[in-house]
Amino acid sequence: MAQNRTAKLLQRPLSASAAVEVALLSNRGLQAAYNRLGVEDALRARESLPPNPTIAFSRVAGSLSSEIEAAVAADILALATLPARTEIADERFEAAKLEAAEATMRTGAEARRAWIRAVGAREKIRALEQAAKAAESAAKFADELGQTGAMNKLDQSRNQVFYAEVTTQLAGARQQALAERERLIRALGLWGSSLSFTLPDALPAPPAQPRELPAIEHEAVDRRLDLQVARKRLSVLAKSLGLTQSTRFVDLFELAARGKITRENVNGERVNFNDPGVGAVIEIPIFDLGETRLREAEQRWLESLNLLAEKAVNVRSQAREAYRNYRAAHEIARHQTREILPLYETITRESLRRYNAMLVDVFALIDSARRRMVATAAAIDAKRDFWLADVELQTAVIGGGRDPADKTASAAPASEAGGDQP
Image (cartoon, rainbow, N blue to C red; front, side, top):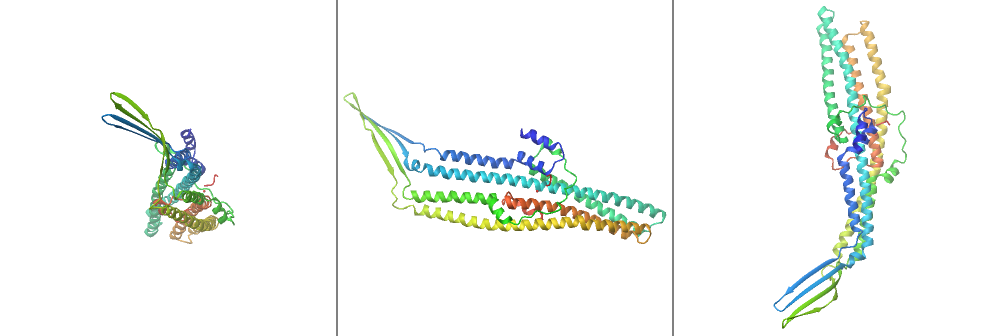
């Protein structure tokens, strides 16, 4: 079923939401997170069952008699604390479910980031290809003019240098696009024949108005999954601490049913003696009154309490930072698209008109074309950064940010931050 759905999604140009769905269906790391959830479920089931009884059996034989002793013992303390242990196991399972949900959000966010970077790199290639075609035509035209003597060597060299620069940037952009596509493939968990999927040619434009989130700190504190996991873990430790306080003086209390059969051979006759009874095993707390266990449990609870408080402070700060980055990225992207690019288009158009009227030399025309190319690439990067900032804003509020154990995350662009909007 999952393979069929993945194949259907990959038949069309992959959208951002489709990339997230493919990642949730195919990413093996996410499947491993669900396996861990299954382990916690098995542990919860085990903790909800009474302890197995212990059976002991021994036989001693001599020249005239033999003795068989059997005992069935049960840990009474484990039976008495079964409801408390079951409640703790339920809390651990709930925490594991939240962790699995966070892993799902993290996988989706990483797929969305990788999709944005891959499509942005593809869009930049298209812009550079157009610039390279124009530069190539200009270089050929300059060469023809040079052969007729209508263009001097200096202007010919300027055209050729510009064409060489654009070609070099195009080669670098293609290599970057290949790297970003491989990164997307890893995020989606694809291989084999699934690698032939296609991507859109360009990222969508940023929305006209950014989102208004005046209560983002409170929303993040209420909704962040990792904070909910920390609260649940703290609750588990509190219940464990209460259990330790209740059982600190008693470590072992076993009640056993015992039976002994003695066989004696007296003058060739076998005589059996049955000796049933009840036994108990109690550990006497002479050297350790449970203080060490209680102190350890208390310190673990205090440690988690302080870590939870620290996480809450960090969540608030991360939410504020992500929102400021989102607003700044939106302003930059809109400014690049609505203000700077139109100005460079005007400059290029006027430079061409003046060149045709022989009012400026070819250097001014090339310079305006080069500046417009740089501005176009910057506008594409700004649009990409805005959508990345949008992803970061979502993860700052809901959770599912980068895994702290992921060392490759630090290599990502600092501006990185989700329609079909990415």
